[in-house]
Length: 396
Image 1: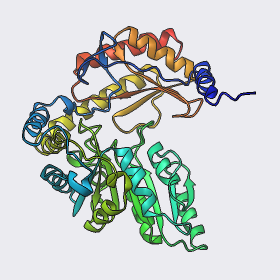
Image 2: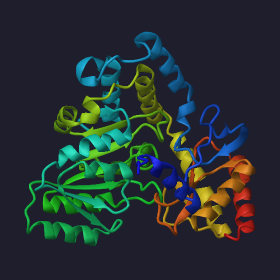
Image 3: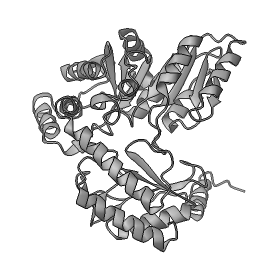
């Protein structure tokens, strides 16, 4: 019998649909703004990572246009050969200044940063990578690319992390790398990075934090988890992204000059990918400058976060352990989360469901993401629909 080598594609997709685990792609027709057009309908945006609404800031738009006029549409090469422009160096100087570190390096995406750097930091069989159980998929894939030993500790459980390190002393790994999200993308809680740094120091381990959802959100002036815990300069690798609070796209690392020299020589995702175009590079630098000079964006974001979260909880919704601009509305079963999302969208609220395998099977949710550009009127309208549709579906 002739084998149909690709038959599994449709079969597995249909199984996802049956279980409510599939994604329906929506079309954003215009900018990612507080009021946006999705699939031809005007909606209030509640699922974008554009926390500070900087993707629409005139300074970023102007910087993009000017860089395109002076430097062209693309770089023409990878960074290591002929693709490093003066704009890239200026951006990296701005990142290091913002993060208060010795040096910084810009990557094409946050995913490329984790996938390219993690396996190089602990590549050998006698190395050990220790990871929080709820770390982002890009961290998980980065770890999988390494030949190292691996250990996982229960979410934010510092006692268990310490036990893993004590056990490791019996095998004496060549290198130990502890890696964690700063802000966890599905629950919005914050890793106890101050405790992790302290424990790592006792055992001679490196620390690596993926602060993609913390940059521009937590810490003084939105400088991230190092500033939040007052441990700036004590984390070995601070990794972040420009695709969330900064409103553009791209990954970054900040730390010592030794870290940057190591990374740009070892990370194949950096070495073998075309460099960011001038418009993107210039917009990223402009975003940092806006955050440094216009702190009201972060202040407004937190005002919205606190109000929205408080009102959802008062209605009886389960928002989990969120401490940040990520506020999950946990409903349990996947089909129920999809039904709530569909009802919200019909009524002009763009809020999408997150289902298994991105979260546990019984923890499906609507993941709301706050934005500094949302007004009290926007939030009031959204909250009214959450309460109305939540009652209809017997969630509250």
